[in-house]
Length: 396
Image (tube, rainbow, N blue to C red; front, side):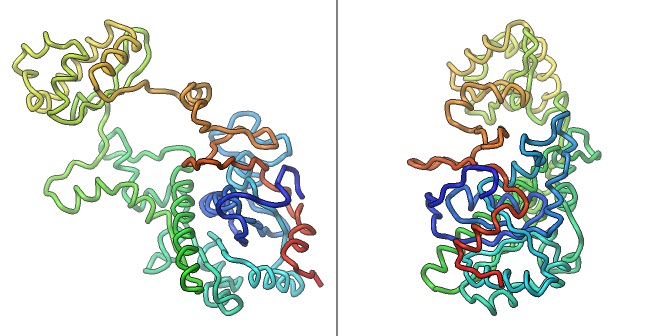
């Protein structure tokens, strides 16, 4: 075993499922990681040089961008609970080992570029020839078909193609790219869901199938409501707006008297009376511009300015308590540093610490009677002997 605490006998809802993970960077790696988290035996096949993510220092990282084991935070955060074996598919001996792994696997997942998939002969037709019941999963940039299928893409460029950089920007007409490889993580999670669906159907049909997902597809799905507005209504307002010019002043963020920010979301007319009472703005309602919910929408910028002054008269705790008592959706606007020490996050076990000391997010969902294994991302080729032994494969 490589550095970590992978159990000899895995448990979890996917125990017994064998996965060949041939992923690089993040989107594909996340899908394999989630399978491993739930008990599948995920073998990450890397080139002898290793996944480039191993040495990647994320632009958002601080001074200590590597784990105690010398692996980048980016790699360990997306490859926990896997085992690693290094193979050169240009070598006949290593190609034979790869073929035996595929023959013994239930799932194959990759996010190599379409050109690389063809070059390495790891397309679905080639793999199904050796294992007809294999679930093949491919993560791509802009989708497996169409004139842009071979375009190289990454987290930000996938969102750019989907129009997401404009919908997320607070400055109309000016694109904005959020940090943190968010679309990569979302795409890997969706691909994982597709793999689960394929495994369920395979249990009934005994046939393998192919699952695809892309950065473009994920970014479109994330914007489901905005796309519904743009595609089905005239004059839809889908671009981002600054806080000072909200569509509704009642769905916005405000700085309280103690300097802390809070978010309020009185999203419709039914919430108007509760907001007025909770925020104690009866005096503002006397102004014709703010006499009703509809009036506040028509004068959103004026209402925002009035609420800026109003909420600055008391600390955030005061306002949040009052608004909650009246059933208004609201909450603090945290910095990530706040979240790391938050009691609500801790009470639900949303963060965890891996065997190499890396603190990270646990899972995007919670299962009863299941404890997440906490093995760090594997050392390159650190599991060759155990993988070949456990999968019944002879290297020669």
